[in-house]
Image (tube, rainbow, N blue to C red; front, side, top):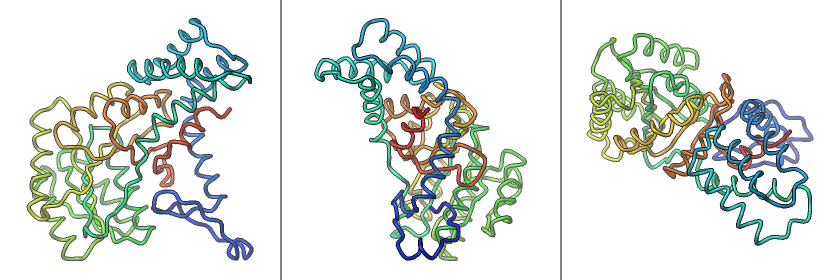
Length: 336
């Protein structure tokens, strides 16, 4: 995926210094721009979690029960979750015993190191395997998670990286969903396979994949209907969609991407568990991080499920949907 590259000066063109992020090379200026958007998008969580830890730990060289209790409160109130919080505090205790704390940033840096280690195992950018053509991405999630918008943003980013993309409007339940996806398609010149409202979503997927194969598309992104994870009959429909896709290509879908709304906090973890159990989620996209102080839920999801976090959404713009990078995420949480 490409975050739009602007014009380069002659000097830049002569000696570009590229930084790899996923399958994209970014110049230092562009990397700074992406981090600025990330930092801005995480501002609410940073004020609650990062600033709270800065105030609590800066200048401290030793741990005591009061500090641990205050840390626990900050972490849990930021939706890090009980299990991940307990793990962080235990690691910090052990780290403090092992290492001599000689400077005023030692405890804070130690906690950042622990939190970074927890997220690094989830850092796995989505890679489009050219051996699978089209590479099929099935988008799943509950109503209101930002799934259709994320589908459109992904399509645009794939297109910007030179890939031929097709969309399948398999959300035939929500009246505006097909129209919303068609607007994305028209705006970006991406074909959209759709049927009438109320049509069989599995049939839409069958037609879309057949068309994508015939037209030699690189990527097919399937936007399924949003559903609550507690609605068993609708979850069963997702299983049917996946089964029908496999009839056209037995290796597909190649990615089942679950879109979660960060603003619902720990409920996002429960959703992830249920969707994973039903359809075998292979990657997670966490959206709406810019509108909440509950971005800590990402630690709970990684701790409990161990699924890769492919993308995070920190704003409305195309480039605000970013490949997840653990180091940048933790840095953005703590930078004052």
